[in-house]
Amino acid sequence: MHHDDNLTAKLPCFVTYLECAMTGERHEADQVHNLSRAGKPLLVRYDLEGVRKALNKETLAARAPDLWRYRELLPVRKAVDIVSLGEVMTPIVRMPRLSAKLGGGEILVKDEGRLPTGSFKARGLVMAVSMAKALGIKHMAMPTNGNAGAALAAYASRAAIKTTIFCPEDTPEVNVSEIALQGATVYRVNGLIDDCGKIVGEGKAKVGWFDTSTLKEPYRIEGKKTMGLELAEQLGWQVPDVIFYPTGGGTGLIGMWKAFAELEAIGFIGKKRPRMVAVQATGCAPMVNAFEAGQEHAPRWENAHTIASGIRVPQAIGDFLILRAVRESGGFAIAIPDEAISAALEEMACEEGFLICPEGAATYAAYKQSLADGRVKRTDQVVLFNCASGLKYPLPPVHRTLDRHKPIDFELF
Image (cartoon, rainbow, N blue to C red; front, top):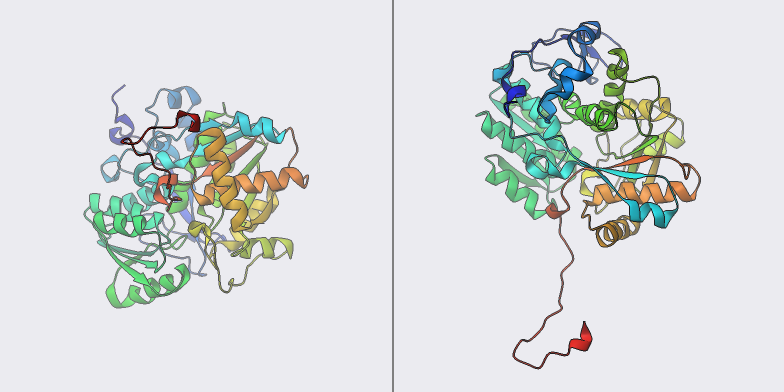
């Protein structure tokens, strides 16, 4: 098979309309949209009966292993609009030593750090940018804690779309440099991601850029849902018992929940769903509060702080969708202190040789805590999402030296 078949093949597209996630009101496809008329996220709807007839597991299995293998369930109508940097299917890595040590079930890590720009944000942004290209958008703007901005910069540059990006002033150095290097104009802002988001929102009318904030456009969810499509396919069209997902804006959790519903509708999986667990940091846990209070919406979290900057999102516009997925699946929302995040990162790197990002480490810490408090059974197969390469974050310094000109004490080793 030719390596880029999925990117060039003429395949049917089954998008029918967009739907307001809150009211269900229909909006036309193939037009530029931000939020729905009710001011809520828009979800892409497909003719799933048509997909069921057009696609079977054998056809799919024969395609190249990238996220574009799922074209029938994606919004890009014409192959010529695909803006790709090589979106591989990310591996699932087993953690047998940690399983044995904890006496729990199988621990699987979906390693999103293998994607272009080193994070799962590539999935959402490759779709948003491909659709922006299809719809003739010339300038995109976004607030970011780092990884999303890097992905937008890379794909937009490839599509010759101008980008302006705003990030909190303490965004990791590597992220800011990567955003700028990949062709975006990036500003550090003395505030948090939602403060940056306000600037993007205000500039919409004044500058005329397209607001690419999380869930303020319909297509990032469609890119992120490929995590759920891949996961089911990689597990032989089964789903795991529990998914631990680091939750800031929550696009991936919402996307995967949508993916499972679509897979069932086309006959690829059955009724079983994973319990979806939204993992947050104790320094920024609006979803956990809302979940425990039985609420649909989460008020803004004041003075948000955590080393896991990707989940430092004080307020999520899709809060009700995150909470719905968590509740419908029989899952829960859990908050992890920074100390436990650091310890989990170190433990996985040291014991399994697997360097994860802090947000990914939060999912491992959450699993340990849930195993201990009985919310997850010892027999449960769990999937943890490592959302970015651990190499994109500040790492602890090492000070051990050896002078080769002096006698070496081999007892040391």
